[in-house]
Length: 89
Image (cartoon, helix red, strand yellow):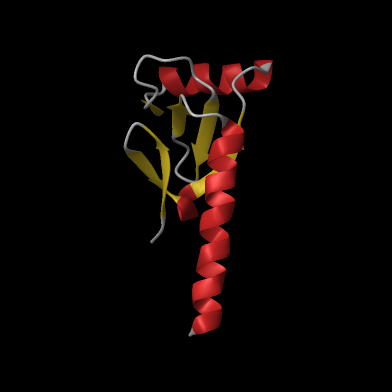
């Protein structure tokens, strides 16, 4: 199981991530609000501005202060290193 750092020492399983979105659009804001009402939000922004919204396969919504592009790059780097390990075996 691989984990991705989403800021401030918080990690999420790479295999559970469905989408990473910017929090600025109206549909994403609605998604976050609905998740808050249903107690499905995990806020790991440590009081800072939310810069990424991570949606998991369990319908949890994770709010992070790390930019969506940064998290995506970390996920891509992790996937490429996993591919390299598979080729070596």
